[in-house]
Image (cartoon, rainbow, N blue to C red; front, side, top):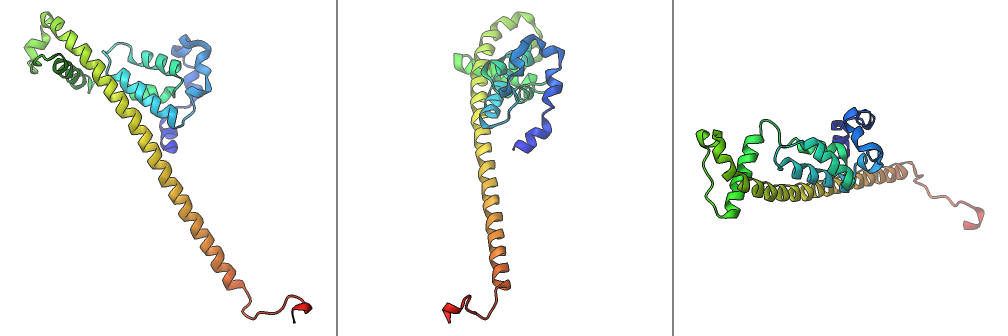
Length: 194
């Protein structure tokens, strides 16, 4: 898991030199923002998924600020925000609206283009959309957090099992080599044993 994330993540020095992140000052140099462990990765995915479901407004900046405040891995947080991208914006927004409508007990409108283009209808859609965004953000953040925790533990168990198997094979080979090189005739090691 660590090897995969290290290949995907950019070098921290290039990120630290970015002029866009100078807004955060010295807090950006906190080592916890760049370490990759189970806690920081799962927290970063949770923060990123939470921000991705929020209404589209400066997602990456908000995610970076939350990652710095919560001291979770910054590159993973910013990468997780890209769950919401230009291709997924419409389905995520509509699903948030539909969930919000269900929570409020209102029947959600179908995807009729004339209805959604008309600005007069937007105010009636805004409340279910915001409530649905919050519900979906919390649910998605929880799923992301526990999903990364489970994936990390599964990967760790698999690696431990591989190491154990490799160690047992090495022990068996060493034992076989010792048996092959051992003398067949047993001779006393000293004159006292005769």
